[in-house]
Length: 625
Image (cartoon, rainbow, N blue to C red):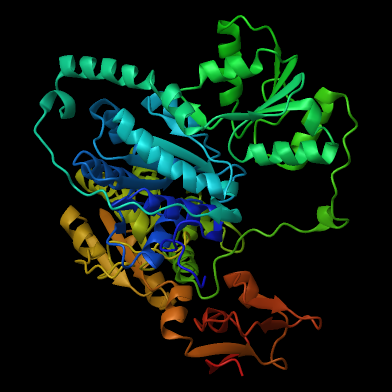
C-alpha cells in the first residue's frame, strides 16, 4: 500500500480491508492503548496499527492472551485513556470474567472490545455467535455492514462508550473483517491519554455485595439510555416500503440488497437495518415493522435477532408472521450468501428464484485439507512422537496424543494422523491429566505450541506437577504465533513496533513449575527426538520436551533458503515413501509416476531425503535458477 491509511487527511478515499478500516477508526477516535491476542479474522486490526502507526505514539502490542489484553485496556480506560481490545470469538470466552465485572465498574475513557465471529467457520473451532455475550455481559453491542461502517462505527463506539461510561462491544464477522471496499477517511483526533484515577471502592472493588447491587442498578440505568444514544448516531436505518419487511444486520444487509436487485424487487420491500444489537432497539423495531404483513429476519449465525424481533412485536401487540431460521427459511448453521437469501426472499414474495450458478466441475473437485507447510518443524516433531511411541514398545493406538490450537492441529490429517483431540487453548495438557486421573494405564502425550503455552498452558502444567500425574508434554516452539500471521510471543526480545522486551524462556517457566525432566531439542534432528520421546514416555513424572525450531516460512523470509532438494529421476522407483511418510506439499507426482519437488516451495529441511530408501532425493543449492 503506497499511502498510509492511518495518516492520510480527512476526505481521502482509500480501498481498505474492513480490519484496516477499523484500525483507521481507532486512530480517528484518538485511541492511545491498543492490545489484543491474534486470532483470525480479527488480527489485521492491530497489525495495521503496528505497521503504519510508527510515528503516532500509540501503544499497539499483543498481550499473552485475551483476558490480559482486556484487563490492560480496562486499566487504561479507567484512567481516562481511550483503549482497544481485539479478539476473535473464542477469545471473548477467555476474557469473559473481567468483561462482566467491567460492566459494573464502568470506564472513564472510551473502551471498545472488537469481537470477530467466524460464520462458516473458516478458521475457528466453533461457529460461536457472540451476540449472546452482549446480553450476558449487559454491555452495548453494535455491528457494521461494510468497511466504511467499520471505520465510522469504531469512532461512534468510543463516543458512545464515554457517554455511557461503559465498554462497547463491536461485533464483526469474517466477510466484514476481510472485505475490501472504498472508505472515505474522517478527521484525526488527539490521543486520549491518562487523565486521572481516584480511589473508589464501591465502584472498583467487587468484594462488596451491597456495592455490587448498587452498581447493577447503575448498569441497568445506563443500558436504558443506549437506544436513544444509538439513534443520535444513526446506527439503525430503514429504506424502501412494502408489505414484506426484511430485518437484517451486519454483512447480511449486503446479501439482502443484492438479492432484491437480482430479483427486481427493491420497490416492493422494506429493508430494516439494525446496527445496535444490544440492547435491542425496541422503539425503532416496533415503529418500522408496525405496518408489515410479513417479516423476514436475515442474520448470522443463531436466531438472535429473530428472537428479539418476535419478543418486541409480541410485547407491542403487533400481530405479524416472522420468518427466519426458526421456521427453516434460512439455515441455522454455516455462513449465509446471496443465493440462500434469494431463495428465502423468493419464497415469501411468491417468485421463482433463479438457479444458483455452479461450476460444472464443482462437485468433482476432491477435498483438499490444509497441510503443514513445507519444512514445517511440527511435521518432524509429530513424526518423532509417533516413531518414539513405537520404539518405546507401544502401538500408536495405545498412546493418545492430545492436540491444541495452532498450526500443529493440521497433524490430524494424513499421512501423520497424529493428534486425537483439539479442543481449546491449553486444553491438551488439562485433558491429558484428566485421562490419566481417570485410570488410563498407558502413556499419554500432550502437544502444545509456544504461544498457546504462554496463553493458557502454564496453569494446567502446574496442575499436572502438583497432582504428580505421569504425562509427556511436548511444547512445539516455532518462536512465533504462526497460523494467524506471524505475530510476536513473550519469547521475543523486540516486538513488531520495535519495543524492546525481556524475553521469557519456556524452559525457565517449565523448570520453575517443578516438572521432573526437561529436554530442549531441535526437531530437525528427528533421530535424537525419537530417542528422547521413547525414553521420557516411559519415565514416571511430568516430563517436558521443548521441540524448538523457527517457523520455516518465517526463517526463510528472514535468512533466505540456503539449500533445497531435488529428485534424481533415474533413481526414483515411485515407491512413494517420501510422500506417505512426510506428506510435504512441496512433493508431487509427475505424469511419469515419479515424485518431483517444487523448487520454489522447498525450504530445505531434508526430511523427504531422510525417508527415501533409494537415495533418490539429494541436496542442491538454495537458489532457484
